[in-house]
Image 1: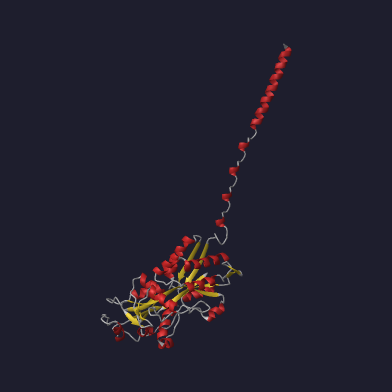
Image 2: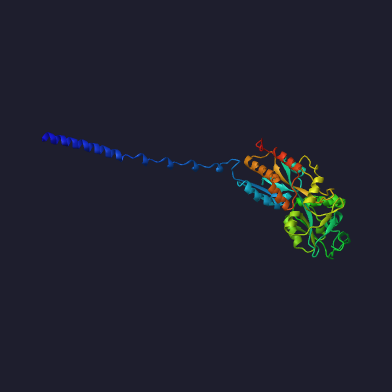
Length: 388
């Protein structure tokens, strides 16, 4: 009995030890309690490529300023381009061609807009500047005459109005061009730009082309002394919007603006007798005719004047509007790439062209567009071509 009892005790002890050992194993942290793979930082939590500073995905802001002549279309284009390149923001301020030229010379903008040509001393100060024609536009004489829906002028008459030699609307020279029109016996107020302006340079280039007296006594340029001011018959406005507003708010006034401003503000514009002796109005057909007449007029700097074109249908007061960029002194290659991509889009995209034409601009002929694209491929950043 004792032996049996001892054996039973030993068996109980063995079973107890086995149970104890099993319970100790169960208390170890099971594999499931270890940090699972899912708790590790996944790849998606790393900085995505879009946040890295690469030219393709980096958020880029380009700042430009200058001519108000193209301001309506640049405003539309810049908004459209956000749909093409959401990471690129393009700002453009209309401060006049003179302001734009100064800004790029001072290094305060990435690009400038100008309707007037850079001077030799400006190229000497910054030799790598390049003017690129973007569009052509018409400058039109706008007027505010109650009851006069159509007005026809010619070059000599327009010169005499802006020289303040013709002082009243019913002057015989104006009446001869407008038979049957009830012209008021009222003094003419001449509205002009008060700031340095490519629009003024285009307009006065035309006046100088049809009048030696204007060219020699008043001159051609972005800013000048207006004879009407000396007689107390002139008023100034800043930018195309300022001149448009001055004419609209002043009865019996005449001024000059880019066609887009006349269209957008519903201001009547005079028809003109062109160099071929034909009466023409500013529209897509007459602008294209003028551009075609000067198709081979570009110099090595890609600049050309297109005033007083000889074509049968040519609108006589025309000008290219340009962007001014750096060809060599570029250090931020991502920004340079973004600017060149934008320019390529603007001159080649069908939607961009349609928007420009709807606003009253003439897009570049194919031959001119090829010249611009060829120049873009010469742009360098840190000594290397940007477009490949």
